[in-house]
Image 1 (tube, helix red, strand yellow):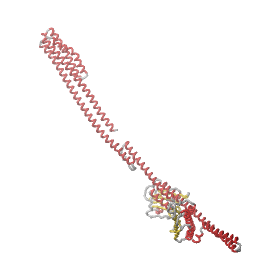
Image 2 (cartoon, helix red, strand yellow):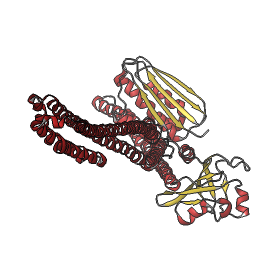
Image 3 (tube, helix red, strand yellow):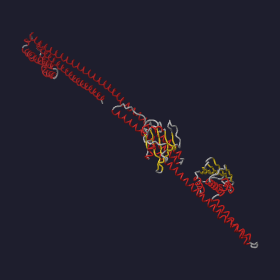
Image 4 (cartoon, one colour):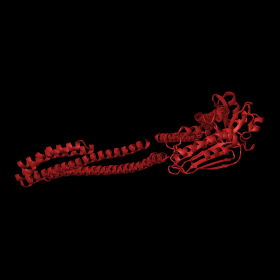
Length: 625
């Protein structure tokens, strides 16, 4: 604004000087032309006076009338020519105007008082004017007029010279003003250009470069806020925008990291991994997300203490806390606040909140946050995070911690449900096995014994019948045979209901019976002589029985290999054949029932049956070592 005003002032002044000079030069030109006209008019008037004097003198000397022709013409021309001179000098210099007026008056007097009377007298008496006195008088008057003309011309030349000097001075001033104006304008333009470059162009280019870096992902770039007015506003707005983008980007990254951590824990929960693994993952993810060097997942005990179920990090002066260790609560601590209120709690300054005894139990802890783990409406435990260094807690730590405690609560509820379901299924299987065992015993001790007794009675009756009663004896023998077959069928049914051989001979004997009854050769390998629980033996027996039945029906195999081994706390059973394969797991109620039985014992069952390479069935059941 100032530079523009200065430039306008300088250019305006220069052009004003130039315009004034041009006007002055124009006036000087007008005066010069007027001087030329005045001199021309004076010269013409002087020639007229000379013509008058010459004509008059020639006529007086010779008496020839022809000399009066130029005289007469000059006399007639003198009045208008004198008027031209007077008019030309009337608006100019006053001295020159007075001199012109004196010349015209003297010339008129010369004509009126000397020239015309002398000519008239010469016409009457030429000898009377041929005197020295008349001649001297004429000469005096003409010399006086010439002197006046010479003075007038010299004065006019002086005025013209003065005007020319003024014109040259004015032209010099115009040239100087123009030069100064142009040079000043160029200087101001250069200065203004430099100013604009320094205050506008350079900051704008810097802002453009920073904007390019910002668009390229570098959200930490900032402009130095050194500009004034609009440029300063632009720099501050750019920095505000960059800070806002960086904050939004950081919040988005934090949200993405938080969602990724939650997704990892949720995946573990969905995979139904053991709660201890979920608890450890929760501690690790919370520590990483909140940048907390110390995390603990605690279970509330009825006596008011807590038990460590998982943790990451340690207090330097106390060393590592182990899983299963009991912790006393500090009355003013974050965990105690959670137990009292059932809501998340935080301690921004542990040193101020806790007493000396509490601080001695957790030296070095500076701040902490704790969140409740609520399972089925009951406060089950607490998730804690602690920081050792000074500084405020992360923003929103309680809310972010709550999301992990919800996942931990879900894992606990799922684990409880799985335990309850497994126990329920085990009870159902045990009750069914007991019912089968009772039915088998009742059949063996009741119905089967009565049928055997009836068969013996029929055999005795047959022996007492006379030989000649052939038809009666044949009928009794047939009935006895039918009763024997019925007893055999009943024995088969009772074995299907509950394999009595398990109780009588054990696992290996029962599997050998199944191998002998199989229509496909069986290679049996049983290692270990540990006594297995009845429920496990029954499950293994039914798995092998169902597998051998399926091989006989569908596999078209030439050999079946059955391996049973107890390794530590796991019983492993494998049944594989060299048949056609292609079995579809999940089809058929037999395998589904076996899977339910195995899973009720906490075990797993897997079937691999690629087409053309046979079928392999793998079973793992946890057993007490």
